[in-house]
Picture: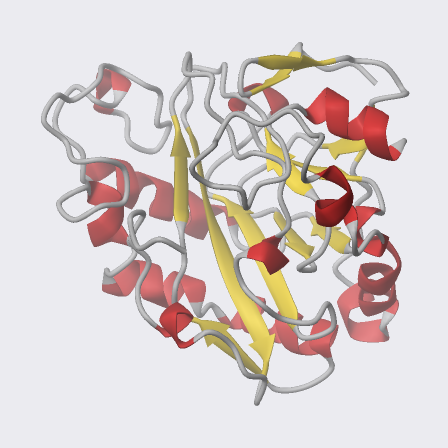
Length: 286
């Protein structure tokens, strides 16, 4: 495999077979014959290339970047979404007054999150009726800033059993490795106590929030003996993962900004934190 240099939160992840492997794809037909559901149980994720129409995803990307002040997007090309220049005076990402805060409340985005293809996939993977969690974060990373999602499990933030909750990670636009997509720690969903085992020894850069496991992906690979699985994503691709698989993201080094959303479906009738019934705000504390 040949990849660009990989970094996460400014720290390198060696490009060797010991540390990096390929995220395996699952054919869309496997959703209908049960193979995808079986793979989800075995490996904690399914990578579905082209689940969503590319044009729909690119239109959502364009809508998002159209909300920013002139100059933020290079050449005004909101579909490409290359970084132009910082916009002084914008509130923090996802807070009141920021474009992302408005975006997740728009009719267009709410319809996208409820897309029939996503709902149908979740019903097949969970084996029955589902409910979508309304709180739907949008992640946006700008090149040159060594800020990424730290290694974590979703179960720390949304309490649910492995068999009841699914996260659909949807890149809003093409997302090669250089743009900083998600990476998954291979078969880590079977280590239910990984948080307890790493809590007091893992390198950590966020003293005010102990929910992530670590910001050092190489350390996590060394500690667990597992590899990080990576992929070049295209608009329309979706990765579905369970609440206990360890995942993180890479730093964005491409001109094109990384934009993505986390859409979650839960088995109908399953109890969950009522705060996830409201719209996402980056400062809501959970």
